[in-house]
Length: 364
Image (cartoon, rainbow, N blue to C red; front, side, top):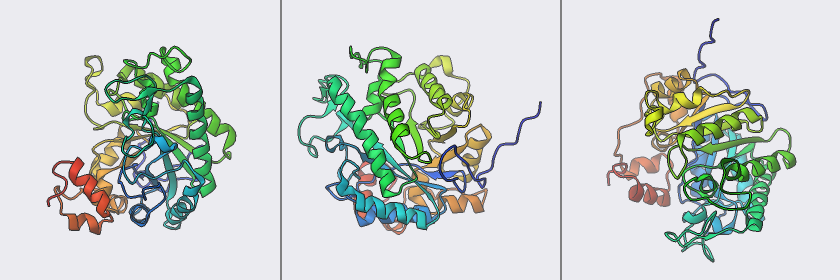
C-alpha cells in the first residue's frame, strides 16, 4: 500500500462547503482591541485584516466577535450581537474578498472571563464561580445562548462572510462548558462528557439547519488546559471530525511540536495525536508557534491539512506570500519596534495590547 505525498503550502484546499482556500496558510483569529467601543468595525481593524488578505492568506479570520453584549472580554472587541454591527461586517467581508481571500468570522462569548468594566450585570458561566464572581446560567439562558450563537452566524452570513468559526478554546464560555473539573450542572448541559459537549452540538446543528448549504463552519478547540484532558480533547475532536457537520477543525495547540503534558500521551508531539484521528472530509488545521515556512510545511508533513498563523502574521502582513515564495523564510527576530509593527498594520490599541500582554515582543 502506497501513501499519498503530503500536500504543500501552495496547494489549494477544498472543503465540503463553500469556496476553496487558495493555499494552506490561514490567518489565526487574534485579539487586537481595535474595534469601536460599541463593537462596530473601526478603521484600524479593517486595515489590519485586509492587509493580511492582501498578504496572501488563503483564509482570513477575524478576532473573536462576541455574540451577546455581556460576552465582551476585551476593550475594542468586535461585535456580532446586533444588527448595528452589520454595515461594518459587510464592509469587512467585502474588503477581504476584494483581496482574493476567503473570509471567516470567529464567534465567541467570554463567559466568566467577560470584563466587568465593559458589561452591564454579572459575568455568567456554566457554574457559580466564586473566584470571578460569575453566576451560573439557567437552563433557559443556555438555550438562549445557543440561539444567539446561531443568530450571530446567520448575521455573519448576511454580511457576506463565507463562514464562521466557533471559539470553543482557551477558557472562554464554550470551553467552560467542557470543563470536567467544574461543570457539574445537573441539567442536560453538565456532568457527563456528552452533556458538557451538548452546547456545541446544539449550536452546530442550529447553524447547519438555518444557514445556506454552502456556508462554511469551523470549530476551534484547545487541549490540556481549562479542565479539558487529552483523552476528552481527542474524543471530542474525533466525533467532530467524523460528524460531517464541520468543514474544518482548528486545533490551537500552544506549540504544535511540543509533547503533551500528561504522561500517558508523551512520546509524540501534540500534532501527531490529532493528525492520527479519522477525519473523513473534515479538514484539520493546527496553530501554535509556527513562525517560518519550514515549520508550516512540517505541520502538513505530519498530517495537518492547513496551518493558522498568529504572531508570524503580526510580524509580517504578508507572511503567507513570503512563505510561499521562499521555503527558507523565517519571521523577523523579536523584539521589534513599535514603528515596525505600525508599518505592518497594527494600530495604537493593538500595539498597547501586545506591549502589555506579550513580553519581549515590542522593543520600545
